[in-house]
Length: 294
Ligand SMILES: Nc1nc2c(ncn2[C@@H]2O[C@H](COP(=O)(O)OP(=O)(O)O)[C@@H](O)[C@H]2O)c(=O)[nH]1
Ligand SMILES: [Mg+2]
Ligand SMILES: [Zn+2]
Image (cartoon, rainbow, N blue to C red; front, side, top):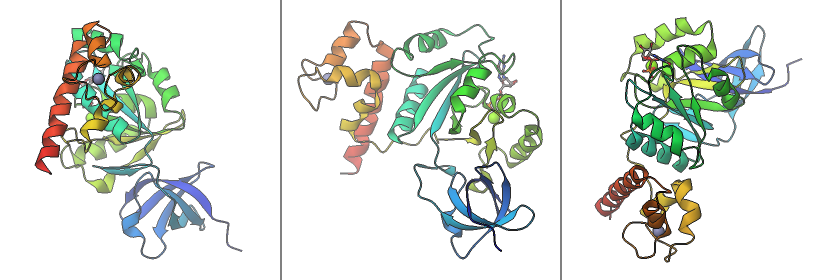
C-alpha cells in the first residue's frame, strides 16, 4: 500500500537530489518524477510521494507566491536588511534602494542594525530614529553578545527569509546565532563555494529551531536597477504615501510640482532630507531607464 502524498518545502537541491521538509518536520531526499527539473527551485512548495527510509518522489510544484532570481529562490516572504551600527558605516542610500527593491517585489522588509555593541555611527542613529516612524520594523542586534537575537527569532517565525545588505555587516554571524550548532560545517561549504561564485545550484534554506527558514545567500544583487515605473516609485515609500493624498496632482512625482505635500513634509522636517534626496536620486535613475527603453 503506497503512502499518501505529503506537502513539503524544498530546502535545497544537491547532486541531483531535492531535500524536502514536510509539515511534520520529516525530511525526504527526493528524485523527480518525470521532466519537471527546470521548474523546481529552493523554496518551492511541492507534493512528495514518500518511499521507504526518508526518500521520496517529488511529483508536483505548487504555485509560487514570490520569486527572486539571483540567486533563484521561491516563496520568500521576509527580507532581512542587515546593516551595521558601525564597521562598516551604514549607508541610507543603500538602505533605501534595498527597501524599494523589497517592496517592489511585494515582500516584507525588516531592518536589522547589527553590531549594536559598537559605538553607533551617526547614520545608524538616524536610521534607528527615523525608520520606525516611517513604518518599518527595526531590530537592533549584536551577533557578538546576542542582543536582539530573540526578537529576530520572533520576527522570522513561520517566514521564509533571506538576507540582504553589504558584506561585513554580520549576516553569517547572525545566521550562526539563529541556526545554532550544526551550521559551522555548512558554513565551511559555503565559504568554499565562495563569494561571487555563488551558484544558484547551492541555495539552501536553513531550518531555524525557533521556527521559520533562512537562506544563506543575499536576496538581491544590489546593483540591479529596479524595474519600476517612475509613477510607482513614490508608492514604495510608506512615509510618502499618506501625505501624497494632499498633493495637488494625483500623479505627483514629488519632484518639482507645485503644492506637493511630500515636499512640504520635507520642508517641515517630518521627512528627513537624506530620505527625500535618496528618493530623488532613485527617481532620476528610474526616469533615465524609462528614456533609454522608449
Ligand atoms: N562587534 C561586532 N562584530 C561583529 C558582529 N557581527 C559580526 N561581527 C564581525 O564582523 C565581521 C563580518 O561578519 P560576517 O558575519 O562575516 O559578515 P557578513 O559578510 O555580513 O556575513 C566578522 O569579523 C565578525 O566577527 C557584532 O554583532 N558585533
Ligand atoms: Mg557572510
Ligand atoms: Zn507630491
